[in-house]
Image (cartoon, rainbow, N blue to C red; front, top):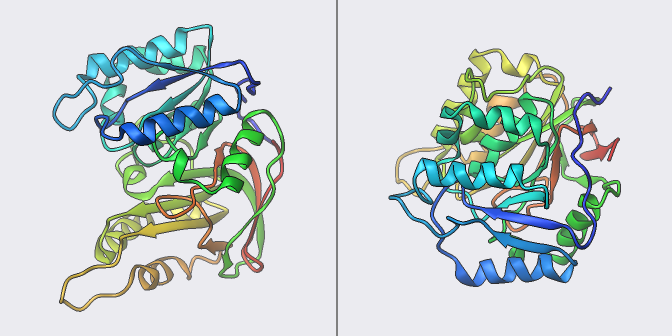
Length: 301
């Protein structure tokens, strides 16, 4: 049974607020292209007050970034929230306890990936759906089918299946929980970690050497997490093969070594993450994973 609360689906004419909860803004061209795509679908786009602030490697001070997020949550005209980009910094916002309260009080779609995993997992911990998908400045890099699929879902239409490479393990069902693997690892054991029991994990990463992926997955194994989940879906692991002259496995070899003995359905090469395609994956939706044929089916919308 789907126990997650679903924010109101959007319709053309709704207002979407743009925030910068992580790294500082660096891509004017992609910002303009992302806004134009949303405009072309009939949505009003509003930039938050501190959208172009910079504070070291952060998009403004903690107070500036949390102020924009709180304002978007409490703004009755705002129906969805989309970050400019990822980077680092979202985790710092949750040192202010008011944020967790307002996320519960004002459930709205939050859309993003990479560092935005922090927000998506916090929402999952309080049983509110969100969307793992392109941030504003990466939306223009998506193929047309991925963009159309996203806007269809955000208006309440059911998603078609996605196809990857099946590793076997049969068929199972669970709650979809996408994440950037490295970011999610730093959330384990914190109040931002949702329940992992009965989930279908959808994991991706970028720029991590194979031995680092090995270390992370070994930590998850030692914590007993993979005994709780009902399946694993792997997206792109972009720039994760080492350029070192030292002996190494490939990232693909590491993933198979650390995951293929779990006796659960696993699919690899699903089109999401930091690769060429970042197809949206709703967080908290019921899915069926077919590890034999490589299909991920979305039961509810």
